[in-house]
Image (cartoon, rainbow, N blue to C red):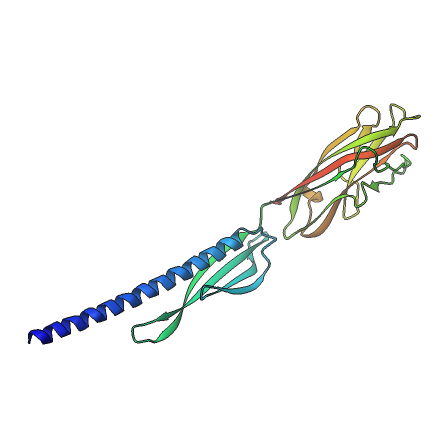
Length: 260
């Protein structure tokens, strides 16, 4: 009788150990899948809004299969549509019970990335001391603005919602040859949106006394940018054909804020 009881006790103990191993293995697989899912979610959250391209990507990590899907969606209010992107990450793993039956389990994570309230962009042009870009002459009664630099001092944007814009630019010029430049001769700069302008503020800077041009322009209300792609460019000319003037350095910074 004693031997039978011992045998039964050992069998129960063995079954308990086997069951415990299965539970530990299941827990390890689940935690491993969670680690993969969290790591992938963090990887996608680290990207910028524009860097999150809608679509599905898949892969595997140590027998854990994962799938990440980015969707472009919109929240519709009474006055406007606000875009956002949803990230869904799924990590799949195999789970086997004590009877040897296998089944696929999943860990699913979701997150939402709202459309940025503020966008910022900048560009610059720099020339060495021996070179430069000649500032074009233009008739002051009928000014014709020309691009600054080979590719222009411009920024291209594409917004999903209307944006109020603040532009700040600085332009340093070099007087290569000052012959016959008078104290009232100036350089003019203007802002052009999609090749239309200048608007709304134009600078007029004396060539001889102020070789650094600085300006801030706000595009709000009727001047605000509607949704879609736009090109914003600062152009210039000088109101005299005397002397030779070139560009030393120029920079343009744009800050776009979601229009209320």
